[in-house]
Length: 247
Image (cartoon, helix red, strand yellow):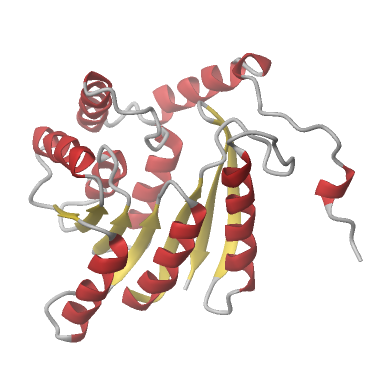
């Protein structure tokens, strides 16, 4: 049996941003060059980021590489309908809505204050015709969307993205939302470890986040409905992980 790598780790720590300052510079360099052909989208995203800062929203928005990943998935798979849980400031919804002019994004946000800010950002981006923002608990909203799909009032989703604060919620929402997706839909779940090494337990408030991310990875890996890969980045948010899966 292969040894669990966590058993060999003796140091408990949270990463220090000063340890790898060049990671942010690399990400900024790549973003500058790889997004240079989308000045309008860049302006929309900058407004959203500045507006979030103005309203003192924590900087937990999707980093550019993750947002661009979602947009490219929508284009490559010719996704017509996107389901997002965890609107936050609307950054990911803007990325997805920018994929092509016929796309429709349904995004769910429980926090009314965040939903108001996201609505402002989507309005400023001129994308409200492509994005439906629903305020409420995903666990309550998703069954209603499922009923609409069954009744022929909505189409099933070709991309399903979940970005929530706790991994327990993320798994619960994934479990419910999979039934709303097309076969071979792209499923994306954010594992928010933020400044933590995912293989090293920590002795402070970060421990639940690390443990939750690992449990989510293990649950997805054991689910016969999904075939998944972990995409890990080191950049603005240091260790950051996204699970990409196909239904």
